[in-house]
Image (tube, rainbow, N blue to C red; front, top):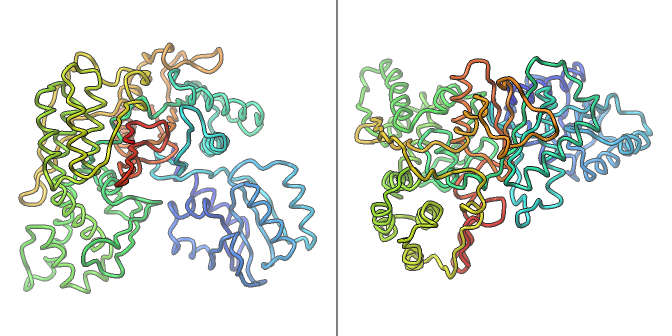
Length: 560
């Protein structure tokens, strides 16, 4: 099961079906993102696609020498844009592909608009999701709920996105959902309705063990999205923000013009693919080794590479090296900025306390360390709020809780607060035992020596998803907590598992799935979510009114 390959194959089929000749790729906002994360522009150019346009663009020229490949979501707006396009066609012929199921009435409306008979083909290709990694997908949706119920307009979109994943992977699954979440049940029922209605589409070859769709709710583990990360992809998203594989580096001090926005794609960047799940220290070492290999060709100019700044100086001094390997230049810049932020925000110290809050049960030590960091002027607002959120989730019922005192500390840092509620991910809401009462956690601190003088730290925490999947694979996941939708249940160990988290997944959970796929023979897992979290995406700060919330409301912690 590979979601990246599924989307790439769809796009290749679209382009090949149009035959030889010059082409334009006509997309909407969402399908532009879907295509851009799996193909580079240069790759598509090699397939004779020389122009990329938006269906909603008003100033497109007539180009009758071009064939149009339309890849669009089947929304009412897109259908209307397409009707207008077909009434006054700008291209010689149209090959139309919708990313999901389209109604017969809309097909009829398109046929009636095609008076000049320019439409050669209309197909459904189910690439209605962002394929982030081969085993990770996102729907790029935020604000998916109202209270603890679905935002009415969002449930149909999530249903479409998730069913398109099933169709792309050619799976007709049994469904299990998180009983403590009404949203999980609603989504499970909505998926089942589509499978029943479109039964012909889901008529795939039967396997000995049916595939399984497991629907979870982010509220069951509100801790994982709040933790700093130390593997490359997760760290980049946490500190710099990955948006459809792109990073905005325009705010980096002294950044060169050609590096203000960079693309990190495992499909087209061998270094990134090889270092995706390695820790920060190992990445620095690998960049250093790569550059030292190049230096061997320049013995006269050999210099020591002891730090990130040495590497940056080296790259800047070798224009020919920059030309040969923009990839290395890009990664030196990214790792350099990560290194700067880690130092500036004292993230190693912050991360150590986060891990203590998530994994240990020493309240005395925890309260001292959180208070000490809140009083540190170098600790940023977002990190301070993150620590208080973790403390509140971890010690919400503790008899000696110092939460009011910590809120005063936040206030002194300029974070306005009057009230705090642990509602979203608190003990009352959670369906599972996120924080075990015994806390029998064997903790081994691992110190990774990367660049000289830099230690990359602390991977004590394992997301709740690891235990959930472990129990599922071993056949021990309780039906009382994760019931099947319908009377049937799996008798054998599941082999193909699609996990979907309402409220968003994290890169830490993606790493868990990656490791399970590597270490569990015969088991294939794909993870998806309404979005991919980082703390900035999960936490909203405002000088007058601070709301600390996940993309799915209700609020995890609310400062009003």
